[in-house]
Length: 494
Image 1: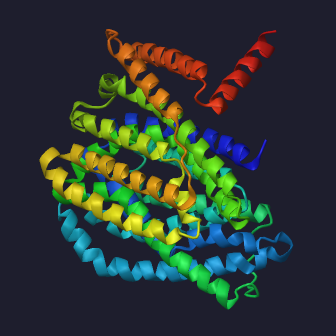
Image 2: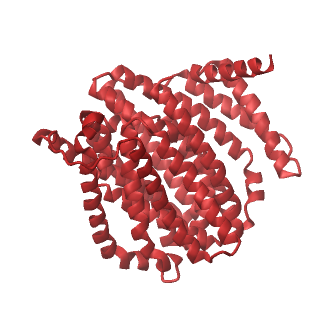
Image 3: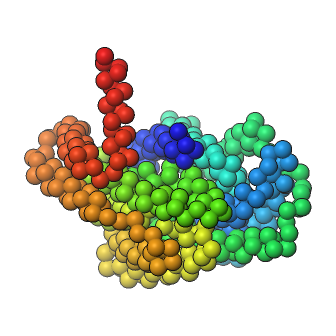
């Protein structure tokens, strides 16, 4: 089993374990025990700290993946690369502090004096620091071909911490203020665990060594870092800008409703996160060796496999949309079409495959930055247009429109520059099977007990969709996976 497949499988297990835990927290406990405003302020803290942390990386994440192969040498502690990363962390955190104190008055004014964000805004300092250190250490660890440990900590362990902290809040061990404080500090625990893992692996050396930092290489790293900074900042801003803009137009409560229903739509995207954990390293190495065939194969496989899995998860969610609002309080029904638009948006992102990764680690990496800036401008404009017209559903539709436009641009660029064309009739067959499966399940009368109704629809979707995909042979990787599982079952029963 290759590195890509092994790391992807392990990361997938951790991600889905985290999803199950996160579902209990975000979909069941939060709406029941927290107010919409309290859910909203937690989301705003996460959004702002993520944007600030991305800014504070100074784009070094992209430079790490691209240039670490030249430094990789365990006997020589990777030529002092981790010390260089430490210098970047210090400089980036200093820049964050400067920007934070400059824009803090505007953040308070924009949120409104009645917003809970005003009360907890200073927690953004430790939250950003922990997020920054974890992000860069995780990138370093991924460059060492270990994507699964970061996924375990970030996707599973982090959510276990949050679930435990919510339990303490429910049991009145502390009030909401204590919960938010410990929520932030739990991110610091993740940093300590990742540091301990790197130390155990013998990869935690801070010995300075600038011997490989030639003038030409330093220039290349600075250039890539600059464009990666803009790209990464823009990418994260795109993900988080909707909740911030909703807070500007409405209140913490609408942010809370949006983020809770947004969570259901993001379930569609989860399978792609495991692939994206290790794929950038593989693509960077392939470009280093000028092996475009490998890049094209990864690109093609990523589009069709992700489309299959994405459609399956979207069907499961949207076919049970009425049952979703049996779980959530009535006030959250305002986010029904948030789930639809976000789910469709994530299918578009998945069918685009790793087009952004390929552009980002090719010689045309600057193009990614230009596309990202255009994307950010487009999503801000569409949010500004649609939020007053459609409420929180407008933010989700704005995201869907912008992803469609950006995917078309990226596809066109890769086709023109490299001749990559990953799509075939198999993609159309998958969409046809998805639509047919939904129509069959849609016309089935609902069962009064929503849990039984979810199980019934889930089983039907699994049987109809999986069987149709298997016999259509649109994705032989999926077929092989099913064959292997069936063989394991037969061996077990025999």
